Image (cartoon, helix red, strand yellow):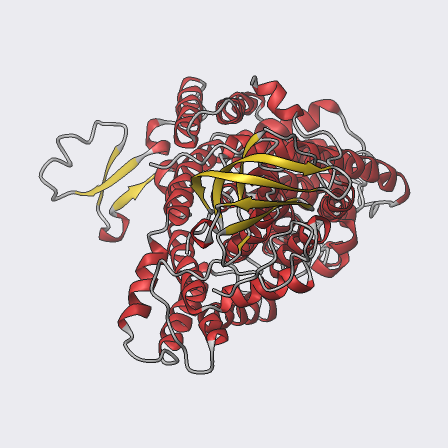
Length: 91
Length: 523
């Protein structure tokens, strides 16, 4: 990306509930986890339940693959692939 | 960790989920509960308010003592062995956030001082004089020039002092309204403090949100420029309606005395730093190039001598002082008090030494709060009551950053203290690092120059109080009191407004899935 185009990125109004596509892989922070080993991810107000993302992934950046997505209520499911990063402040 | 059996993504997210409770590191138990782990940082904030707001002492050394006393005091509330508490102080101080900020500050300090000593402001004075700007337009022009100057040197405090010293008296003689003119100077300082890659607050906002500094600068341009266009129009319009003091006198004489067109060469130095940083080069590399260009051009054009950049004042009895006295950087001094090293580079770097110690200690206190559980408690409460969706989360980030900067005069210290909170709230909603850094720094830059107790206002006001002694025509009645200027710091108010609107409408919002900020390069 050129220097000029970097200044032009983000001149837009972004939805508070972004859409995801089934099969899409993305990296996201896990907000919370259930005791049964599933994690919850919020991308804005979009909510993903991530299977296999246990408590060890909370507040870490993980790679997931979207397996289901409902555009109407901006919710979906994804599968945990791997941990790819940490929070700015690690506990 | 508590559990929740609902596996439906439609379930209420606020119900009994768990946050990471920091199991990886040792916990610290406090008498009085986990809230007491906030003691060091709360004590520091109260100390900072008393010192900077109530007594108007903008002394970072005093704040260092405040956080030290807070850290010592907090230890007395620890249950059991104090060793974990002490180790956590070290753990906090060795976090990459602190080290990265300090290294970048020191580089930025050297660059900024070279530009200041190399006559950058004199070049801008020449431009203002040559353009023949009248009293009504002078506040708007001053806003633009102060913005350019601060974007180059990064320090809004330095810009406030330089512009109050040079542009303020000239503007008064031209018939500009003094309150509007002071507001324009502060607005320009906010612009640069917010945008410059060498600004201490820009650096803190980037490193606390794990983002590269060049990317942060490019991504915040849209907010800064929107606010600046409206502010510029505001100064143009207000300049027509708000009259001057009718002093008369020769403003041109005043401007010509400080005018040096060649100082504008530092626009090139500034462009080199911004261009290389935004292009993705390491911030140390980007600023180093700026230092090389600024030093080389200043030396080549006679703006600085080698001794101005670095100078050694050695005693006469030193073994090689007199034989090497011919060197342009060496001076033999008789008075023992004059022995030392001086020049732009050391002066610029040394300007950040106290702040470096302060930031290490604030991050240590924040780590105590994380390990003791108070941070988690505040976060849980915020998520449950304030940041209930992404709009509210962004409004919470704007409000909390604004509040802490409104009460702590030294805005960099306030920004370091609130950085972890902004990071955690933003990460929860997967807002990318640029968006988080931009929300954080806009409030930091804006609120640092609006209220009467703000560091930027006090820096400019202190410089203004020297003017009656410098100019016969300048009487104390012409001084603008800090309270009078509050409504006229247009860039500050507009920047806060832009972010409230941005949070409500989604303007400029970026999620991690849209673009991941590049990690700030570590050493």
